[in-house]
Length: 307
Picture 1 (spheres, one colour):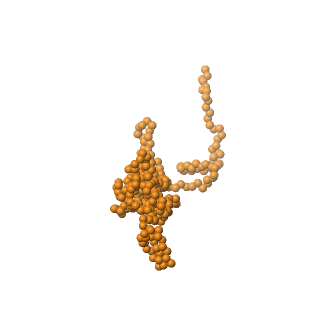
Picture 2: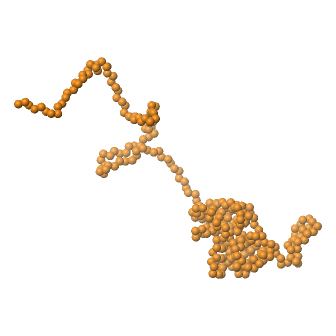
Picture 3: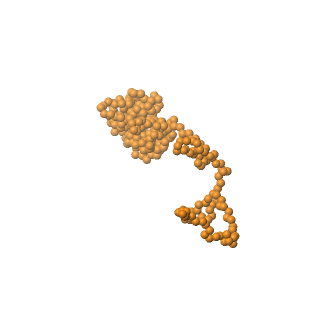
C-alpha cells in the first residue's frame, strides 16, 4: 500500500512515516498563503475617504493580488493571518478588512504596529492560519481611567466586534467617547491565539495598571451623650446661662422600674417625686371637730352709719 499526494508534496509509507519532498508537479504550488509586505499605518492610506474605522479594530488592508492568491488556495473562512516581525521576533494575529492596498503594501492599525515594533515601511511576514474559537479571555486596562466607564464589559464587547482574533500579550486599543483606552490581553483560552468571530466568550478583568486600593481608616464608634448642646438667650446676653452639664458616665445611668400595672389603651403618668405620707385621723375625732357652716360671710356692699 502506497499513497502519493502530489499536489501537497507529501507521501505516506506503510510504516506511517511523514516526509516532505519536492515533486516537479508541486513546484510553485502552496497550500497556505505566506508573503512579505511593506507595512504602513492607516493614516498613510491614499484616497479621499477617511479610514479611521481601521484604527478601531484588529483587521488589516491587503493588496488585490493577495485576494487572487487566497481564492486559489484551500483557505478556511474567515480568513485569519499571523503577522511576524522577523527583526524583533514579535508576532500577532489579525483579520482582513479589504483588498484595496497598493501592490507590495499592507496597512495596519497603529496599535498593531506598536505591538510588532514596526516602523513605517518596515517588512512584515503575513501567513494564513486557522485558530480555535475563543471561550475565555482576560484583559488588564493600562490606566485607572478605564474604571470611569459605567459598564466596561458592554463597551469592550461592542469594541471587539471590529476584531477577528486575540493574541495573548498584545495591547489592543479601543475607542469610547472619543477617548482611546488600551488593554493588555492577559490570557486567552483554549489557546494563546484565538478567533472571536461568532463565539460565546467569557470576559474577565484584572486590576488596572497603577491602580491602588483606597486606604480604609478604622472607624471608632463613640457613645452618644444626651443633651450636650448649649443654650442661647433671645436678647443675646450670656448672663444666667448655665454651662453644659458634664456627660453622664455609665454608672450614672440607671434603669427605671417597669410599670407592671400597665394596661393597653391607658396612659399612666409616673411622677418622680415621692407621694406625701397620709395622716391617719380617727373618725370620731373628725366628726366632733367638724362644724357645718362655720365660715364667715362677706358683704359686697358696705353698710353706712345711721344718722
